[in-house]
Image (tube, rainbow, N blue to C red; front, side, top):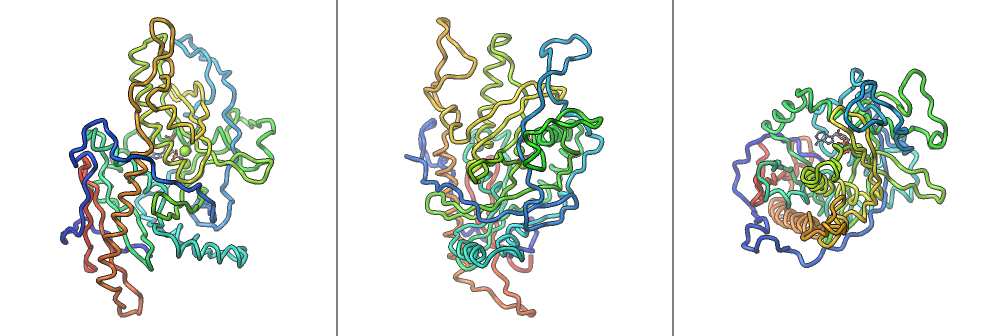
Length: 433
Ligand code: A3P
Ligand code: MG
Ligand code: MG
């Protein structure tokens, strides 16, 4: 079902264009959306795994269980400035880091395969339910795509950090399938980043944190940590081919969604349902006692990052986010658990800013929100409806043509978010491209 067409140029006429709300003349600092669109609690439909060789399995063999990082009892061999003690060393086993070959585009294949439940074990009822949900869905895509669409709302303000975003879109039986189109220039930029030793190291830290925090068997969660010559808590070397993914159904505003995304771990539950956990690493925040100005800048930077953490988890129904804070050398100094649903309140106007107190020792309250979920979610709902409208109109006017093999060719559209993001444009990609 994925567009096989992979060109960068899209010379065809623009079929639709939508301005960023900021480009429509609304005053700065005001919200274009009165309220957040209704969001339905995501319900799991199915799950699948990728193994060490990137083979796809319609089962949970790569699911991980959250145990938490090892204790903060390591001491620096040489007396340095604080912290005096630290936890896991996230540099461990970097020489054995196996990275997935991302030059192989995977499109929506794994997600579509999961929805087609090519598994012998699924019961007839489960198959029927998944079929029915797939037919009812307005949009089928990866969770990361919805996150990118929603966060594009925040991008027009800071052009320096704006990422261009190109999507391929295809309408099949009334359901919009969306995948990212990685342009040649975006791919070159990605390869440049991957070749950068520091970027590779920071990327590794995130996965090393996952190894320290998780185990592959629920029974091991409460067991003592073994360490056969390995650091305490280490559960195996990093191979980014390995993933466990969940597919959920949900509804954002008027858009019924089926989205798939990686889930880092689950908390073993005693009452049936397991709670999903997202793991993140971040640079530690300077203590406000040591340097108040620096602390404030770092705190704000972290809170901006929380938008991505929040959306990524909220969209799949992941209830808990555990952030591991590390120092510049990759040593874990602390970790903090966040309830996904409480994050918007933390960054909202009127809420105390962590670590900041006035002359009288009272907490400093925020004057304005760092971000508002209603803006990014409202924007995501608006863009998804816009893409569905334009693509469905132009798909209906050019019904799929049977090609020589009798295979049905559906029209493919390119959705372009320009950076800095001022408007989104939709064009048709001609079949010859
Ligand atoms: P951190 O989250 O600790 O940064 P995810 O958090 O989505 O489960 O991803 C796991 C790790 O993959 C990340 O750890 C990071 O190291 C790496 N990663 C994810 N998205 C990335 C991106 N867009 N660019 C670079 N690295 C990324
Ligand atoms: Mg992950
Ligand atoms: Mg993660």
